[in-house]
Length: 342
Image (cartoon, rainbow, N blue to C red):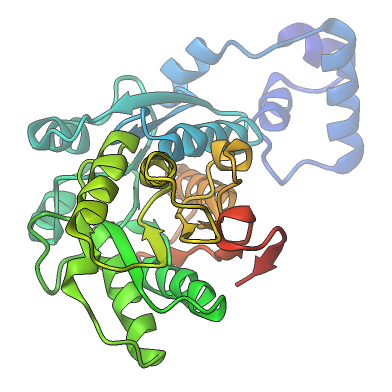
């Protein structure tokens, strides 16, 4: 840094200000320092900076399981958004373990400056745990609303309603749903309960009577469970002409079970999923789905976390809730082949 300062004809402090992107540096001085940095090939020592400023340049992302494609693709989007901010990402897998979620929330992931946290077992009754956290946290998902941290979420109910409305618009009247929680209760804030709520709202709005036989539990949301739930539905003999799977991994299992039963998709049964994972473009037929705005979720969450990590912000904002925009992606499995905005 001293060599950069000598070449640029400025103080070491000015070089430090440029490296740390402080705003109060004259443009011509900043340009001279940046030219010297490029000429000398100077790279800041991140470890040393972390020791000096108490920052590591690393954020954490804690998700239920990377086996679910949604979270794998979300992690990829978070890494891209973090890299654009000059940050690295450590990923932790919570595995649906409540004790693990409590530990990660209260202690954070090792050597990180902040945490993006997507719990599966913690709920609104655990909101008090957030009061004890002493580092920046942004919540992802639907488990804990109204806490003291920023929160980035999905339009679960509204998007699910749009998915079912799409099926209704295709002339479907006997619409099954696969992926409800085995112990679903009114007033829950799990994604499964919120999406079930949207499903029921769409049926009611279309004047379609609710048939509990068409609501099939499946957990966790893996392809095998989607296939098993669909096989059980077929075995009952109840009539259905469409399936709304509460995520795309379940929908892959639905497609498999329908194929085994020689039910043509979409001629006999239309299918739509939720999450718009990349694999859905390559199924036969290709899978219609809800795109929940994964890139927007990642970008917004990283931006919020970086703002909370910035010690130079004099006044912290109150906790914010951001819900990402979604869209209905219509492909072959529901009788379409184009993407429609929500």
